[in-house]
Amino acid sequence: ELLLPAHGLAVSGRARVATVLGDVATVLEQLVHDVLAAMNTGATLDEILHSVRVDDEMLARPWLRPIYDEPEFVVRNIYRLFGGWWDGDPAHLKPPPAQELARELTELAGGVDKLVQRAEALAQDGNYKMACQLIEFAARSSEDEGVWNARSQMYLKRAEAETSLMAKGVFGEAVRR
Image (cartoon, rainbow, N blue to C red):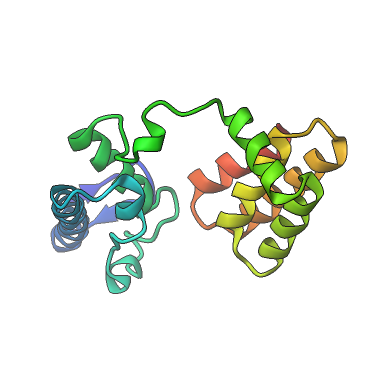
């Protein structure tokens, strides 16, 4: 009659414990079903990450809100469990070093300054996913302190915008690197 979850408050009462556990099981089973269904169509991890969703009504329940973890992280683990280490993108099978790719893309973009400016504009619009990708390319292409300061500021803003402790922690650590 008492549930002490690893994350969140204690739940007491047989009916309430059953509701919480039932909801968690339902969401996890649905995620597994949806990820496997997408994998069976040949979808890549990237495609699955951007298409598999948990119903907003379920996520609104206090015991399912993404305060510690997020459904996207669970999707990654399900994919890895059933699909292994390869994400389905042939370019990722034997990729170049990240720094070499960053330098090439930075050159194509017209230089580090252009990437930083675009990343900052995207962040201003709230598109932190794209902004952080671009600022990473810029930082990996340059040892300039200004670029690295821009990167730190970008991740600070992103950490502040996140809701889950895992995301806040990872992006907060990126501020210090």
